[in-house]
Length: 298
Image (cartoon, rainbow, N blue to C red; front, top):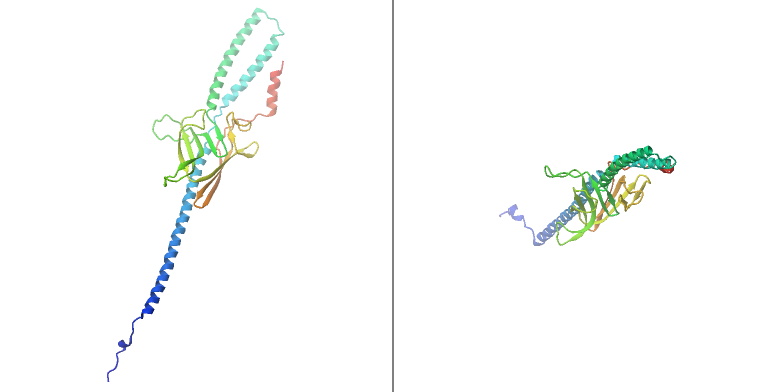
């Protein structure tokens, strides 16, 4: 009698077993693919947020460097000359008052005429220097609004050898609509940086501008007044400025920028202190009163 070989007792997989195995494998593959897809999307979203935050911080660094080196022309010789001129005017008034009570001999009249000629010459020279210094001072300003800023700085770098330029420059920051760099069909509110190496009395005009940051939702600027210890939303050093800001630069600038990141917003804030405001010294009420009394003295 023949015996069956053990190999002949083995059986293959049935169709149902194969289908079940394929379904299990497909389910595992689907879950793995979904998990990997979600991971890639999350990585892309996080990376986009990081890149957007880095762009914002880079823009703040540029603004910080310009604001820190803001340049305020304040020639102390101008203050000295103005004080000398004021003393000359006071001395002339006192001399005129004394001359009205003295006799008018020929020699006295001749001496007075010579003295007056010397005084006129000295005063005219002083006036010429005062006009020169005042003209230079008109070219350095700090014009700050709530969402725009224009000022003079020493942050300019010469790009070409022997260029007729210095380290002085006019620089400005403001919001204006622009076209997207990557998607030309899209437009958004952008932060622009304007600069020119040539200084004039129109600090908020001229030069060339470039986009510093796209998709800006808001730009908020505040300026610190050291005397009142308050943050102001407007700072003008020209004739349009208030008594507390005219002819003076702020001690610091607070910058708050909010940009759109997909459906969310990224917000950054920075306080930048000026290296050297070079503001004129504040006169005490006693000094002003003393000068007024001297001018009225007989």
